[in-house]
Amino acid sequence: MVGSLVLNRFLIERRIGSGGFGVVYEAWDGRLERPVAVKAIEQRGEAGRRVLREAQAAARLNHPGIVTLYELGEEDGNALLVTELVEGSTLARLAHAGELSDREIGEIGADLCEALDHAHSRGVVHRDIKPQNVQVVSDTEVRAKLMDFGVAQLADEAPLTAVGDVVGTLAYMAPEQAEGRRAGPETDVYSLALTLYECWSGENPHRRATPAATARAIGGRVRPLRRLRPDLPRELTATIDACLSSRPSHRPSLEELGTTIEDALEALSDHLPGAGGHGFLARASALAAAVAAGGFLALHGAALP
Image 1 (tube, one colour):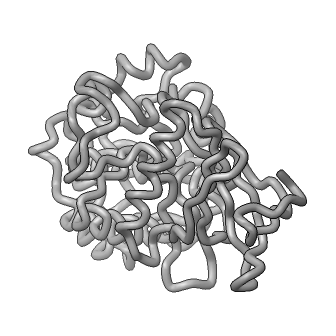
Image 2: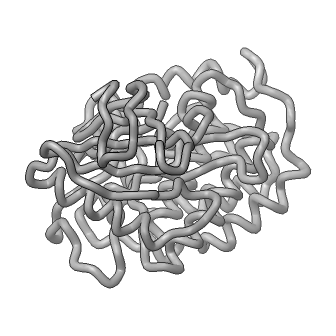
């Protein structure tokens, strides 16, 4: 599609990402004269329904911590989602490279709590919180933007999946989601806490060598973050560990998680992790296997790099 004009308005300039059902391009909006991102998804069966659901979810949301949807269209058999173009890198890439301090991870976590609170208040449960779906930006008030609502659940809409169906990314799923039960805000709390656990510790407690082994690990005993990072504030690690309870009703609320993170920010180190220290880089190689071993089910969309 590079070099083509889509929807009589957007000039496709270069490909910037791919995955699942589609490809993401950088494009130029000739009408408003601004760069945008265009996700092109072939409209076949489940893929077509997913892109519509992503648009429906995104259309409800208006928050600086969530990538903004500009337009939805169709051309040459492809569904086209036009969104703001976010400059930066994914949380997955930055964490794997050891380019984030403990305090920066905390700031990103606080931003994501606010973004998810906005989504939940409008009846949208993301269901696929993971480092690859968080875009980290610099020189802005908001450090992180949540993207890819392709498997989102809308509270007042019929679900796209039947009870027992599983969608999302295995390595970041809450137990109830992995069992095919209906997801609620507590499901996003679990996945966000697991994402932060991985960023602060350098390991994902669920990820195994194969998707089947990963699925079996979900809901099992998680080694407390306190043991991996005893230098972090005690209340912070206790809250993260509580959010990883296998029982949704036992997890702290999103508000409690956000408040705890914000209260801990001043106590968190602003130094980048070294090769030694708390061992982040020594364990962070596990992040490189996130896509292969994470067992992504119902692959969808394409994440910006």
